[in-house]
Image (cartoon, rainbow, N blue to C red):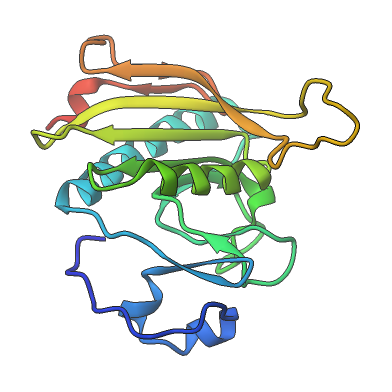
Length: 217
């Protein structure tokens, strides 16, 4: 999302998908609906878009290698597509920077969280941890197994850290009158920096191998 920021109009706190569709595209693309609540999405610098594209390309390469040997597998990899969190309806969705999902049965279908196996976010220095924690919690509540977080460097056009998270479900015993707000949460299961000259290697949801040099060119 490298286009210049458009001035935000005065919108209601809650909208339906149908109401969102009637907005100009340059406005609607800046909005997610969280159970119908309007959430404005921060636009990142050019580096944000650049590294989304590179990471998506690398995930697609790895997915295609997996499908070439595991013919029962069918993966699709995309960037910046809406993921609808309910089984029906469209007024509750998030838009990850990149995602991997099971191939759908036909073209032009909505992507539902139940089909998604991995989502990722590229975090610019301007992203707040509070905003990202809230979005991460929505991914976890939707049951998406894998979440990747890519942090950009503050002082140069480069990736600083890549972290992979796995979804842990359930919780330890609590008093009968206490319930966690989010019983499912992500745990860090992998972390890489530019010091890892061997690159990024992870085996889920398929073998992922990304030479660090392919992210730097």
